[in-house]
Image (cartoon, rainbow, N blue to C red):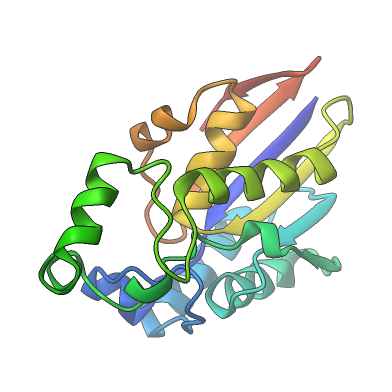
Length: 193
């Protein structure tokens, strides 16, 4: 059996404000560092075979804190980054609606396919995550992988490992330094936590 543990990075100031900041490289705030330390303690008795992380600072720092338990090399992947929100990076929903009403309406009407200027569509982000899974998750392996990443990316990994569709990704919510476990046996994924 292969177990995948998905961890969302700790809190940032952008999280507190409700900003869209997919590719913007925000640091953990003090609360985010404390969340990562608490999660490190929770995971200290586990055996982990591999650690993957988004290279963005908030995920990287979270992974580094947790990895104090394991001392493993962390493999960073661009494909684990959050969705790129392009010109909307750093804005909250009301600002986007006010400053980009036409584009916002197009996004609402085609949330999967609409590509934000200088950013990417949900489908493009989903396919990027799919590339990570294809290149790094060996379904027949045994062991435990820890993946530290972002909310949108975690949602996409969950639905892909469970054989669901992109539309189903909205059914999952993971808080900062929250954790999801999926067990894969004979190519079949099961959500266990």
